[in-house]
Length: 469
Image 1: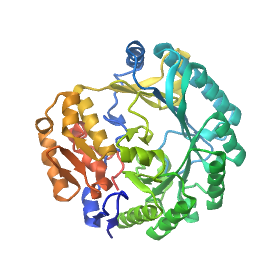
Image 2: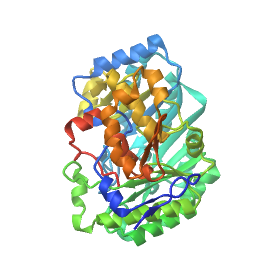
Image 3: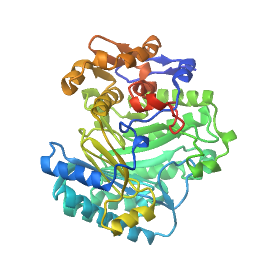
């Protein structure tokens, strides 16, 4: 079955099932480059502190983005690959918030107070595991040492099973103006299979409430490839979500990696849809969302034409960070909380993944950094190339050459040869001025970007990643 259509302003493109299978290979999502699996323990707290102090010394033309990780969930979702802690003991949050505030103090000691922030995101886990008072406490701590810009984007991930209309109103009062609902699938049998039962009516009513409260953007996450899903059942979910009309939709492919993620061992492999079914689900979903008036942003994101993400895509201002596609300029990211990832200048860092390690470091008044990465000059060039392809679908040779003082055609001679396969398949166009991703190529843009990933090309060990489709 052909996967039809692409960005609404471009000609419709058909990508055959055979072509999809040909380029459906495991690969990174490129929320960063190099990707987080390349981080090393040799890069630690001292290196992160040095990077923060360098930013403080030399300044930065752009405000910060801040990510806060809340790891707790009351209930286990079998498909989940996030860093989370399943518990019904809500009293555990108090100790965690104490540690979070200690980490914030250490970051500010190195970075300096009153740093401007244009983007704040609460993720997890389930941030709404926290009580209203605990969420308010966390916001007070952040506002006390950071300067929130007047037009700051404040977003939070919400488990629909943990909120009410009153809780949504409280989130709005705290300043959150963007909200993301974890939907995944509305089919009751699929929900039972993944241990996440939340009726359509509940999500419908919560979205309506969020709209009345004036949230600027409402997002819904969907996943295809889950157990007991079929092309027909998932098409119903897409139809239902289209009728609810969230401003943005993230459409993810389920990656079944039970060897890495223990919760997934509870999923019966024989209940998973086959490759042909997954391709049909993707094709139906893309066609259905475009029919409902959504713009295809790229890879796995859709937005209504008036949403800021769609506007940024049209204007060539799209960026990508650890939260996915973003309208914010390319900027430093401060990650707070267990397992959080941050970026400062030409470095990345990741906090300890377990609470015990996270707490131990903070008791010693040390940043809880477990590993990180300092980018080489080559990494910086390749990051610019990969992000241009992932965000704009257009790599302009001249801009790379002027910014990084390289000759693109000679520097990437091997990569351009590898792209010939994609060009022959109609997925990219290699022009004198640059490389253009075609409408059909957007479906496998991760595979196109992988050509320029020096680390991945060196070892080809891709089992750690989800598949492109």
